Length: 166
Image 1: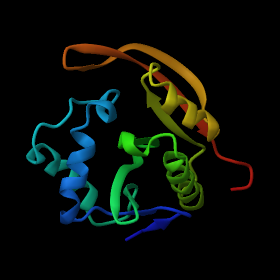
Image 2 (image 1 turned 90 degrees about the horizontal axis):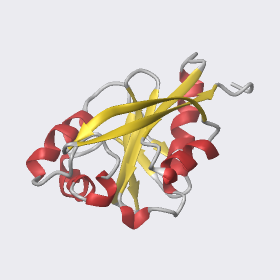
Image 3 (image 1 turned 30 degrees about the vertical axis):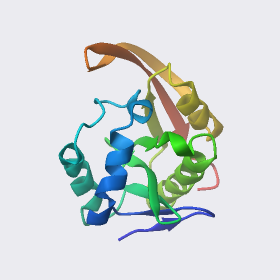
């Protein structure tokens, strides 16, 4: 099983003992503001996500472990699309950028993909900014792509081309 490390983070498969920390993320209104479903009300709602993150086989999605605490998660899903979520206590500290860099490097080293894609709510300026800083550029827009809790949101699609060095 793949485990990735950065200066501050261990990106790894989830463990049963991570349920409470994952629920802390998925139940947080701020963290879930631009996610594709509503905040979780009970840990039982988080269990399916935990099971996916525990799945054996090649790892493409990871929990972000910082000093023994799960502070976020992210990776590749839906083909070539990258995604991430971080608990607000850890926003604006460089954790998402640090984690996504190592995930993207793994993609470039283990695939022949010409690009990695992302889909973000255009109102989520922080996430779009992180993606831009990693080399993603806007490739399109769509209106009313997700309806969560009766509220429609739009999408900005981004793409990051394979670097010439890989």
